[in-house]
Length: 173
Image (cartoon, rainbow, N blue to C red):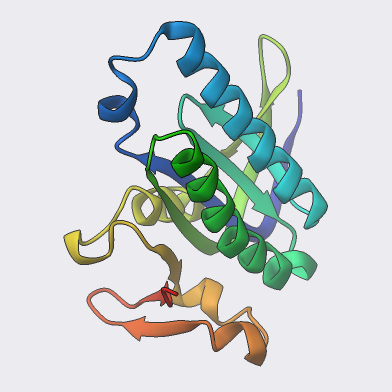
């Protein structure tokens, strides 16, 4: 087991309305839906140079190293659209809530199977943002100011500033 202090872009995702939209589905269908969702998250994140640390039911937690911060935010923008389209195609329309924060965190491999876990205030902030934040932007991709500052000028154009607290919301199509 190891403990590493790292810096990077932390993301947390949550399928809004998952419990409500799946409560009457057969258990096997719910399982397949989650498996397909997890595979899509892992594929997208890995292709963009990031890591999926943990899937907990309909939520994902992971990170991108500093040099992949911009690619990580673009990945989250695409992932939101792709997952929402996948759910809609299955008549399970759900919004993918995503919170992204940048800073230091610890990567710890824990028993029983050496599972990677992320801890620290950076993780807590990403979780809080990804859980939905303000009622007015629960279905948005939300970036903290620290994450926004790591983006290049072209990627920044996809966001607008929303104060209280300072977060950046992806523009809707």
